[in-house]
Image (tube, rainbow, N blue to C red; front, side, top):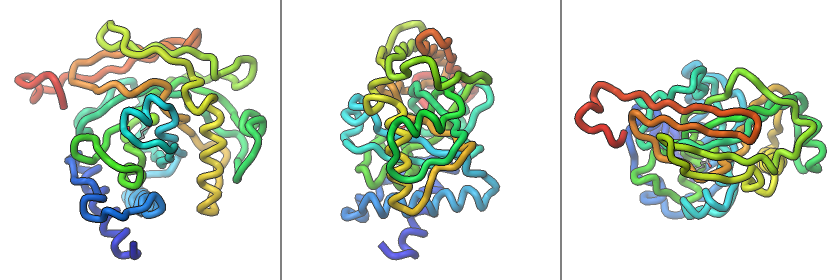
Length: 270
Ligand code: 0L1
Ligand code: MG
């Protein structure tokens, strides 16, 4: 794909992200779109977001569990970029900016040291400043939440919003892969899994991210936030929903989806 074509697609995806309106998959018009094209569109998309005042604060890994890969029919881990505008400072989803949101529990980390290229898992462990239970709201801009790997990469790996609580944990002293997570929606258990569902160990997602970035001559930097990937399949959200995500003995994160005035006659979906 040429530079002007990549720019045109980045403009189009940015328009649909900003206006929370669905678009046809890029591959409907460009069937041979590659994953590399997708990352080039994603980079240009984030350029547009930073030009409008947002700041890059880290990355998210996506499609890191078999449950998620099966759910969307794409079988490789991917990454997206996180900006400060995507972070929620209370556990209340902002439905006004979303098309068909889903939420998933994750472990987030903040790096104290950078990571470049292929490193042993032990180097990832010692580069982590702290670990936070977290949730991510994903929202594909594509009609029907349906896409190829190249499409979803161009759409910034469906990144929409995320929440980190105001407390964090040391990375040391526990095996994070063994941490169990339970997701309840409106009081009913929807999913149970352990963090090992994320590529065998959530720090493996960080290791893979450093490798993916090195392929583009980039690296992870101290202070960056990384969402390591959904531990369970994502749960569709509707106005009025309340979810609780229990992270082992670390605590419970609530997810609150407000009821909007305009939903009064159609309360079952966004
Ligand atoms: O965070 C994720 O795993 C989402 C990656 C993109 C696939 C999807 O939208 O479900
Ligand atoms: Mg995710």
